[in-house]
Image (cartoon, rainbow, N blue to C red; front, side, top):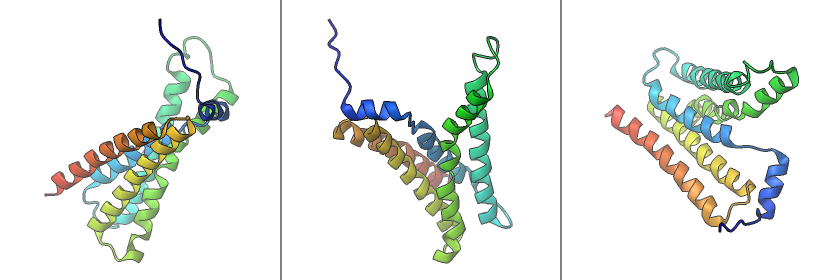
Length: 171
């Protein structure tokens, strides 16, 4: 016999708000990957990295919206505009997660950072966002403190894998 537990009150509250942080966690990891994969960007590297972060976020957002709307449903029914708007809004955190690393790139000259320092700053911001969104998601879902810590640590590990890839590929 499987014992079923009742959801924690915060879990019920989070479920009722409809807030989902999956896109923000995913978008932060995506932004970190973009920074690592960018390498040298030639003339105007900061502008190119900002554009690369934002455009990649938009492209992945659009692909998630498309997959959500047309994946299994296209053969069965056409989506209504309300459903399209809802899918666009629900997936928007993917794009929003690219903004903090892009802002970090934009302000890096004010901090006196060169190209490498800028990339490391943007990567740090992206990984911090990923860990923060994962912990927030766990908290809003009503997870125990231990599970919040596990969610944060798991995402920190994923982020550190990206950091290690950057470190190895640069040397």
